[in-house]
Image 1 (cartoon, rainbow, N blue to C red):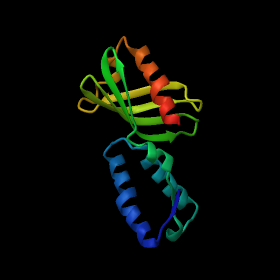
Image 2 (cartoon, helix red, strand yellow):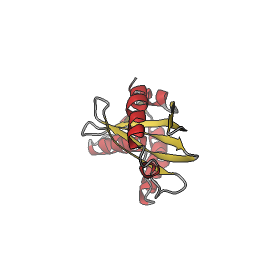
Image 3 (cartoon, rainbow, N blue to C red):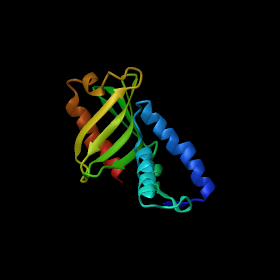
Length: 160
């Protein structure tokens, strides 16, 4: 979906969205894939010599429809839950599925990376309360089961 906006809307977009994103970059925060898409669209617009009144930003409504999608299972007889947030395709064909995982009473935030065919490449989730704690260390010895959860339940659900 493409949006065409007026000059006043353009100014508000820059003030509220792009400036906010740049502030978060300055603060050292990680950006969401949608933030990166906005910055990329704005950058392309500026480099193409575009006027304020014809700035276009493409969103991906199919990602928005999946937002909040929850996939539940068990891992070592404990419930595990993945809640989808965003999808981002990188230039090298890697697809990232961002989201949250609830496991062992803790919430983790991160991404699952796949190739274009949906094969799990990697994942990285950190504890929201203790950022140095990674899910991969908490599930030590259960890596195969977590990989299986991602490969057979999460990824196929999000590829639909």
